[in-house]
Image (cartoon, rainbow, N blue to C red; front, top):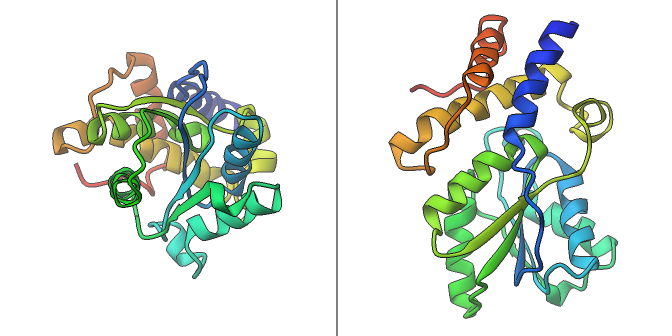
Length: 219
């Protein structure tokens, strides 16, 4: 990855992050994936007292179904348990396969348990904060939500945080795909609309032309 591509990718990286100031909530909802550090971030927030309930949501998605046989949420819950989170303070939803299902299936699980949090802290990968927020607001608009992720720079994330099965180019391709989804998913009813600045979209288009197009969806 040359410096120009890196600069374009960092523009997307910064746009994807919401930079929310966290507040105490009734629940921490961790949207699972291939990135185990997200589990650590969720557990850390619980142990710091930001919320009394920790929920992990994720089965096997488009990327992890070719990597693992055990659902993402089960693996994440094991990490949290190993960090000292009591099992009785955790809920696991391990059937969802995408971000929309994360929210819908978690909503159903909490209704079944007769738990009704009013305020959520949503935990995701740094470059999926904005899309996760837009999805949550679409499917659960009556709830208050703040979004956070592992607190690292783009360089640190590539060097230390992302899954070893993915190359740096893979991560950039996923970031590009997530930005495209922010653009096209509102029309499909999957997310609320969000404005994308012209310079961010120009960076996206240049990255697509450079070959970072493996995770685009048909629009």
